[in-house]
Image 1 (cartoon, rainbow, N blue to C red):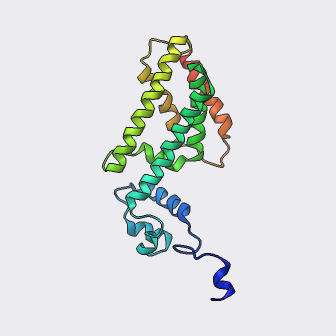
Image 2: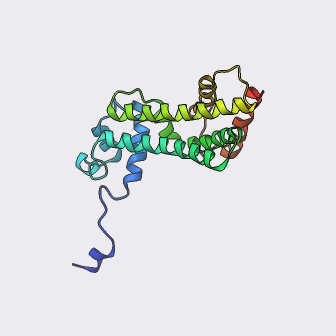
Length: 201
């Protein structure tokens, strides 16, 4: 064995591509072509590797989807957990959550985009949809509590208000561009103003 052999551990897959980069390329293709329409051959061809090299990073196409969706959902769930942990009143929790959710979307845009396009065609997608429903239910409970505090108008159903708030946040995937002229923190301020000026009692 030469010194060159022991200098660094062998890399898996094609040099220049690690697991994270494979994931990024796969998510981009899933968003562009649709998950069902994207084959393992498409992924391997885009990366310039063999199928077997791709399987060094992920066991299957569905495993890639699962990791991407989990990343998006975990980010949103963490934003919700942080908001609840950091504030005692529901109004402040809701504001913190909106800011946190905008932060997750701008930082993980491609994965959130993929999450929003899930239709439940596989076990992985159905699991993601269940987590989304649980997230929505937790947010609706905070909205309901904020209504009781008098911050959110009570003549809008809490579940509907939740959908309206996150409909606005989720729409950012259609036009927000990372590295573009819109600053993520300023964007969060704008979403907060638009949300609460429209809903405030």
